[in-house]
Length: 122
Image 1 (tube, one colour):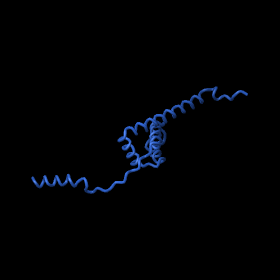
Image 2: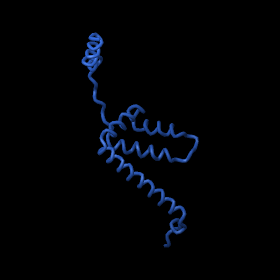
Image 3: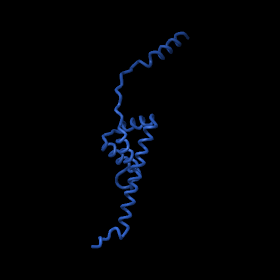
Image 4: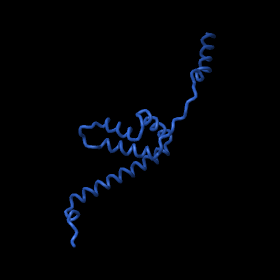
């Protein structure tokens, strides 16, 4: 019994330091990059189905921003651990998506309104 208790205590005391190596801090993905990535991913998720899958669009978005899937997941975890930062990022994402929605609506209005396409009178 004493041997078991001693081994258990030794494991508890030494365990956390065994195999520990100094870890290099991972650089944080800047807020502006995260806003662009998340906005693009939201748009990719609602894009019309065509020959390109969502997974392919997602991979292209991450590649465009020089992020691996693992780096993106670490960034998401880091932002999740800091709710204020995540809130700020998502407020900017929402603003970006609203802006895209307004541009689409304006383009549709111009395309569907005959007066908008008519040449100006001399």
